[in-house]
Length: 266
Image (tube, rainbow, N blue to C red; front, top):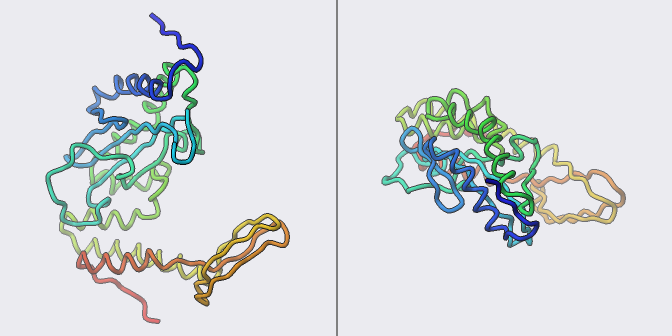
């Protein structure tokens, strides 16, 4: 029997309820459990795999659209600790994951979303088909620490936000296993790359496109002075706003983890 939905009769919440139910019917036999708008399962004992339904963004006035958020959480990578306290939480949210993307970005190459005014049955079935083809096969590969160490580099598109932290997170995994020598090597490799990026941004600057009349205010990392740039014409301007925050974080984290950091002498 077919359900017929009159246009605009369902609220966005009701539409997401229907969509989530359809997706959960597919995912439940695969070991996922429902927690609010989050579908979650553990693999390798404590690695989380997460699919989350985000109903718009009310604080920004965005309604009636649905994002499907995807995440994988390795505890030591998310918490930046070699020693993880137990017990586990019952589940973890997508924003607590260290590998994150969205279904639209993953499949379409841009941040697409679903219109919640459209037929939720059709939307739910489309999401299931996309999960079957693009998400679950990757979840099945990246389902252990060994697999993540070996194959994560092959799935940069599945790691939209934190792919640049891959070496650091590999250091966290091997460090939790007790291999401080390899953890130190990986940690330092990440630190050196971060230092190179900082120095490049400091010396070469960052190009920012401005339209005529637009302006930006920033602190110049070279002079430590606040500068204002007003575009006299459409085009790119160069700013020297390199941020040393990540390097400082790494230096503090190395001390906490007992890692000897190789910092080049000035």
